[in-house]
Image (cartoon, rainbow over the protein chains, first blue to last red):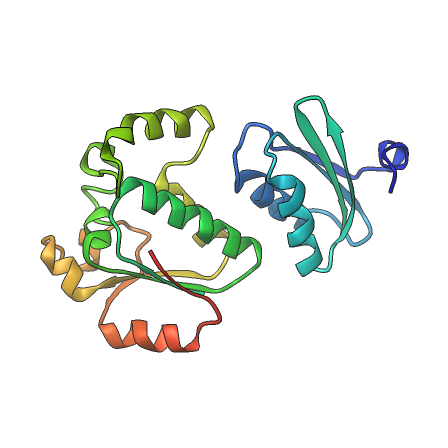
Length: 82
Length: 136
């Protein structure tokens, strides 16, 4: 998805993991995935550079759709769909 | 995943916790075998006492390491293990010999989240059956 498309998706839940270092954002994503339904979208906020690759890789293994990442000033918005 | 946790150093215990977190994110079953100096770190009177835990290498960087972990909001080493056990099937086994080296003979001598005291063949069997085997 393009950044414009990502900015307009209907996010079901946002988890703010900017206060944690690796593996915090990944674990927050995993926990949050357990709270949403199939087809719903989770947004993970992370200030950890490694999350940009780690969360998409994890999502692929778990058969979760990785929609894209928006690179904001000082943090990332990572979108995945259950 | 099978992990042999030999080290009782603050930096390697933290690294083990980070790796463990990645494994539970993948819903892996994890068997941890705590050996030698690792068993000392898992003793009830040692685990949460950071003053008792040194660095595996570059000992002069210990305070810098601790300060950086605090600044980055990195969990205490043992909290990685506690959280991982809450999220997935993670078992912590203490080597019987290693425990005795540090005066630990009963499971109650170790952290409450340790599961049992075992012999070495359990570790070998777990390593034989694991897709991923780490020695830390």
